[in-house]
Image 1 (cartoon, rainbow, N blue to C red):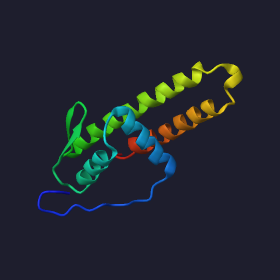
Image 2: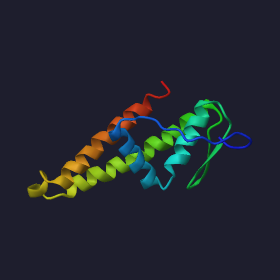
Image 3: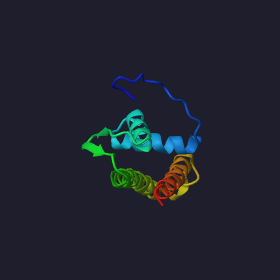
Image 4: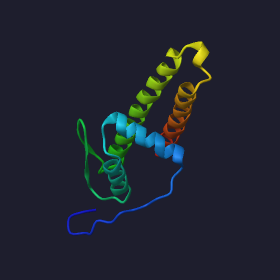
Length: 123
């Protein structure tokens, strides 16, 4: 947090596959991982904050705002998953056991898991 308070770095332990999926989603969406995590944490702490995004600002002040922001993140993850699935389908049959296919398949599974976790966040 800023504005009179000291800024501190926070280190957390998280499943590496989930972290990779989150990193890929942020990169694909053109947003900063640090800003997304800070916005999420500030929202969870009840601090009114405007979190920048490439298309403007997402309000995360109310629960409704946070749910909308989460839906946006899920939609971005779904778009990435769909692109990976399209890539997998374009791989020739003789290369479907290769590293590119396996990597894409793994990414699709991780993104599906991340989507499932995020979908359940506000239930």
